[in-house]
Length: 318
Image (cartoon, rainbow, N blue to C red; front, side, top):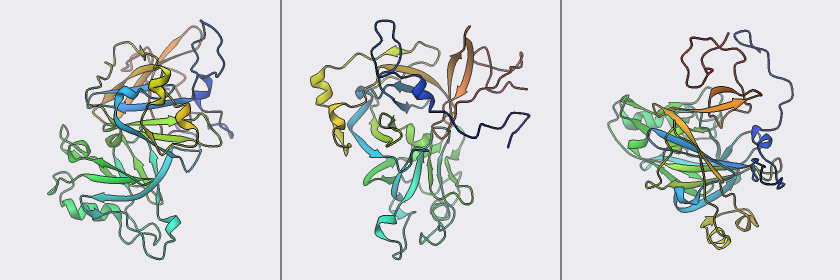
């Protein structure tokens, strides 16, 4: 349904916005379209970046781990286990078939925290993940234990340390329980502040591939009010020598290497904003960068005195 007087969305959704920004053909010197339908996202404590066309290999340490999405409708991957320290939070009952021992985990930049079920998922799990974690820490906002989370995605374990999931500036844990009925995990900004995540739609709609690499701490993220930057093109031999693991067949011959770096505004380590311009003449808008949303949306009318970053506001609407 509609809200605040807005029209309901159309019954059929358009292709992802990324398809309007890409063109596989070389149209000459004036062509500013992306050549690869891929982007990546990485964040720090106060800054964030989108890489267009793929990822910048200089932004990660070690290998880029690849895994296919289990849906082409969202960026969900296979979560095989979740631990808090040595405590299993996702533990399947023996009656669950081995091939079904996973939950979907949506890689969602629009979610601030690590979000997990507070149920046994209809008898699939032996314990409730959120309740088990809550018992382990005692006071949620002043945890008695300060362990890391260990999230197993498609067989690879990724650590989310205490200093990442606990927000010291606001003295609260960035761990939440999922809405009733939600069958898996939402992997939010606590993950993106430690790992670069690649979203490769080159084979969409047949397949969407996710890549995860540990953020290189010496990689300096762009200042939000600064300019975007072009990433120097890698030589063919450097491309072929990239450390990419678990990739689809033939992927390493043509990996998704980014061409541009775009700065994001990181608000309180919980939400990311980006300036965009639309139309002729251009109109500037500030929008939320959200990989958990299926559509690109802006407000059609601005309030003149609303607080804003661009010439229009994400909060100014009628």
